[in-house]
Length: 275
Length: 275
Image (cartoon, rainbow over all chains, first blue to last red; front, side):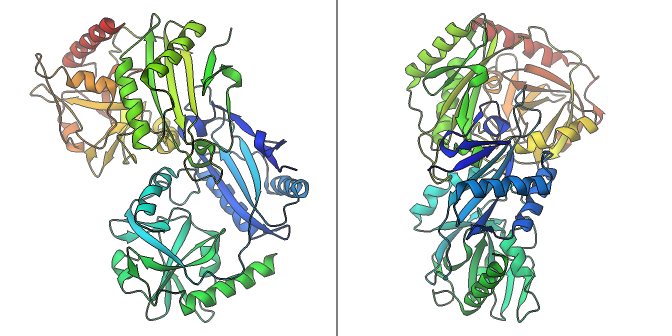
């Protein structure tokens, strides 16, 4: 049986869920979203994601009709109907059906759930990044703007890489769908302090600061890449994914670094505690 | 009777036209469009708009299924059915229904037509602009990305203005839906030479260079605003619209300038010749 998608308050078979073409997402690319995982039917870090969802909505002047409890009720009803224990749930809020195609009106909310394979072992081989000069607009909001990310996909393939790392005149930012961290030879774990999405996994890692690790938000640069010992990216889908090559240069010994591996399994414990 | 909208090759009553929520416009804000006017049932500068539409599609790696003649046939069939002599026609091309919500697939094309009041007299009172630091991404492509434009609407109202003029570290660019021109005390008509949308009306004005006027693409700055004699914006909807105040400072004598008025009526002649 096909899964359901929620469009506003209606449960619609996922393959039929639609919006009118007057929606400001279609007309003007205007919308926000958030995304969380479920493991064994339990949402992971749900309150962190809802915090960010309401924050994004507020920043973008979009009104969420449901308060947090009402939204949770909707989410759990969707999960109960869909019976997808391991899944990704996406809540999208668009600019709505604007009569003049420009002014913000009552938003449309869309909630989808899809099966997701949950990783519980680190990918030791890691991935290859290329750097690219780009600063996301409204970086602290999880908007639907992935124009540059999707446009650059052929370049990534052409360069034999897996993803790209944005920088703004040399200051490292983030990947299109994940935050970026590096580990220095002094074993400091660093991530950009500004102009990036406040990722939920990023936040969990920052909360480990002082517990055997130094994890800090600070300006980091393209030059810092040349001297780093380890690197990895974080996201709710990927958890922690080692980066073993950047712009053709091997990071560390070309395998997941020791600290990256430790962090991965510490994060797994945090996830297990929430699931 | 309600107008029709084309979704791919189907004619749908305009208030029912929809796309599935898996479309990359909804998921990732990925799409392009173009917009032209019809006067007395005749499209204005249609080939210029189709040139730009195909160029935008190509730049964004979106395949238009129809060649130019097939697309024209579709457009004229829509106009014949809708019987809206004075109208605005918008052709939107989205990233399509992407199975993984990220990779570009077969685009969806949406063509809408709406009644439009055609102006044939210049608005002598003009409009007020505020300047704002922002560089549009992919400026030479008519993407659906209006995130910043819509987000800034309340600021415009708060400042008692009508629209905003983007600049990139002092270099003037454009307004969200129009190009910007200024007239110097030496009667030179200038518009930004780079990082702006190649507007069709902008192109028509540039073609007047040498015919009694000097119209040029050149770097122009915030400082140039302080010394300009006249200013105006151009778009297919607005034609030429005088700017009489910028950041609270009156431009010229606070009315449409002499050269702006002359250009307006020269443009009217070009439009009449095409309609």
